[in-house]
Length: 202
Ligand code: DC
Image (tube, rainbow, N blue to C red; front, side, top):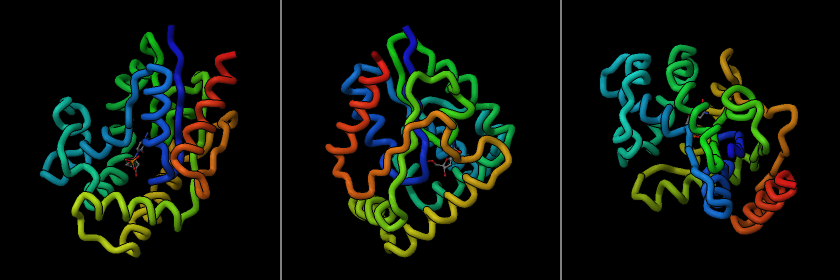
């Protein structure tokens, strides 16, 4: 039976962490849809046309170890504003969302465009300062040399672009449950998300 959990929100709000935890708890498959745009953006930086890059994505493109760098993040946000790129990635995401056994997808347009019929929709947010702090720790922990200010600027640029684009902009679905994780630990945010999903399962 299909059961979809759609998680949307701005960059570095905790969507991925919550998504992985929900998938592990409920035994669902998880798709970080940002990876599709990151892999497409990375291939564009390598010289490919972005629409062609999206149409010919291969599973191994999603495993490149430099998909989280600031350059690739910005490229992902830029290719994500191209309607033909989004269209090329649509069917794969929709099929994943409705696969048997349950699925968790996180991104920007999961509850609004990819799976408006999702059984649970979460819109995960956190303050700008907290998101920058978390992403900075993550990146420096992986050996990237970036300052807190650069990370904050990257998040601001991407959120502005992701929210302002004409096709599938970042915004909460009308029936999404908002979860502000600014002052929550990972455990608290995860517990809260599990409680919301459990309540929806009835
Ligand atoms: O979730 P993320 O930060 O890894 O996503 C990278 C970029 O991809 C983000 O800035 C916007 C884009 N994106 C999107 O437009 N739609 C999605 N469902 C997921 C990501």
